[in-house]
Amino acid sequence: MSGLEWAAQAAVIALLAGMLPVAWRLERALRGLRGDREALSDGAASLGEATRQAEAALLRLRATAELAGRQVTEKVAAAEPVRDELRYLLERAEAIAARLERAVEEGRPLAAGRALPDALPPSEAERGLIRALGLRP
Image (cartoon, rainbow, N blue to C red; front, side, top):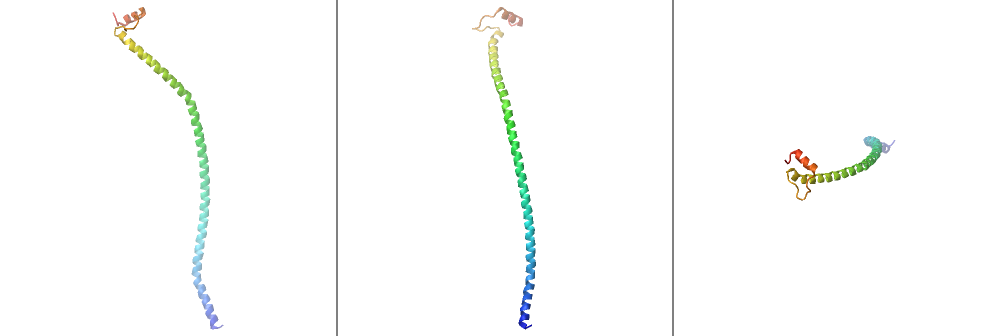
């Protein structure tokens, strides 16, 4: 072999020797990328699973909210007649209270022993009651 061939082979060996560290670094980088790709695919799978679970929870929540809405509507519908009855009773109670208050106001002069100016004279039963109560001699 000639000197030129030896020089060419030495240059190839030197280039190959210089490429070994680069190849090792490249191999480590590729191994890291493969690991990252697997982690990314695992993350994507877990993200997909989490998305499915969230959608299922959202459907359950929506169904629960609809059920609660129907129950509230039913309760309100059942309470309306009770509300109307209470309103009617309250109006009647206010009217009775007003009548009772008027009666008490009209009866105060009688209790004090005075007759109302525009009132009719008391009946025999009223006079007997007034005597029995000791309001008038």
